[in-house]
Length: 150
Length: 176
Image (spheres, rainbow over the protein chains, first blue to last red):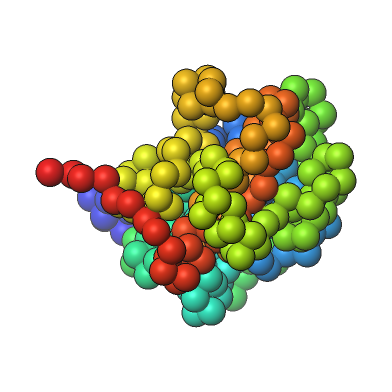
C-alpha cells in the first residue's frame, strides 16, 4: 500500500468513526434528558411488550452515548462496531416494519419531540449510516480475518 | 475498499471475534449501569415497569376513566357545556381545529395555561384532544389539568380526526 493510499484509508476510517460517533451522541442526548418522552416513542412503535418499554427507554440512550464516545476515542472498537451494526439493523427493521403497516409514529431518531414521523427518508438515512458502520466492521475485523484465513 | 492498518494487528479473526464478544457484553453492562443508576437519582424517575396499554393510560390516578365518546363530546359541544382544549402544536391548530377550541399546546403548557384557564372554574367540564390513536398530547394535558385541580377533565382520543370524519363544526385560522 502506498503512503498516499494509506493516508487516504486512514482518513476514511477516522471520518467514519467520527461521523457515527457524533450521530450516536447527538441521538442519545435528548433521550437521556427526557426518558419518559422516549418511552412513549418506544411504546408508539408497538413492537415491544409493556414490560420492556421503560427498561429500553432507560438503557438504550446510554448504549448509544457510550458507543458514540467509544467510536470517537477508538476504545473497545470491535465491541462498539458490533453494537453499532446491530443497532442500526434493528432500527432499520423497526422503521421498515412500521412504515409497511402504515403506523404513523414519531421516529424518535434524534429527538423525543413530535414532528419527525417515520418515512422512506428516515430509513435511507439509517441505511447510509449502516454503510459507514459496515465499513468500520470490515476495517476492524478485516485485518484479523485476512490473518486467520492465511 | 480502503482498509487501513491491515497488517498492524497480530490477532486472528477468531481472537478478534472473541474480543468483540466480551467487549459487546461489557458495553451492555456499562450502559445498563449508567442508565439505571442515572434513573435512580433522577427527580422524575421512570418506573422500570409500567402499564402502557391504551386502557391503562386512560385511567386517572384516582381510578376514573378519562376518555369520552364522540357522541358525548358532541352533545356537550352543542349544549355549549364544555371548554375544549387543543393540545397539538399551534401550527396544527391554525390549520384547523374544533370550533371554539382553545389552543393549549402541550409543549407550551407552562407558559400558557394561566392565561387560558383563568376564566374557568374547577368543576367546568373540559375536553382535551389531539390527533392520532397513539397521540399522547391530550393525555398529558388532561393529567396536567387534573393535577391543577380541575375535576371534570376528559380526553377525546384521536379527537381531530374523529371530529372531522363526523363532519362536526371546525374553524381554520385566517392566515392571510
